[in-house]
Length: 216
Image (cartoon, rainbow, N blue to C red; front, side, top):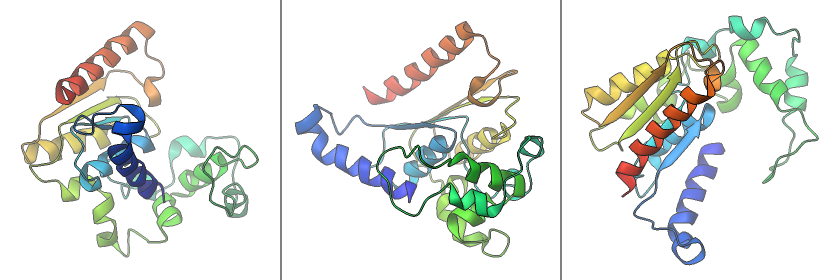
């Protein structure tokens, strides 16, 4: 699964990075955008040794929220309606280590968001029937005071991953006394679409400063 790929890569860079890449294993963090932000946040719980810092850009901490378990009004406006058969045809049947352009994997995501079934389809578990199964995949449920310092960046008008996902993660971090910074970008869509390039550059500088402060 994707999280295991992240953990394997983390272990490899920690063990092999010093000799092969000149990496300092004591100065490593995790960062990602959208679903990659989710993986970074989960990595803050599960990666060993623990990352020095975590950054989630327009990501999410709870994969069982109604935004994923109910049909998305945004994706229902899409001109294409995807069937389950079409969705799974795009996934393929073999493990790949490089991008496979022969399959349209976006159809799977579109189907899941139109149907409100992404957690069930990717995990094989129904969050309505097995909520506890998702505990290890929802960082706010497992946060403790030793969680890494965390940066959260999100557009206020994100119609893919709701900005409330980052707000809720920030609240959970605050409750545990974990150092964090939440940057809500007014008017920003997913990936900060609709935001002026100069403003995006400012946000990137803010993010870099937060991360570097914890990697020195």
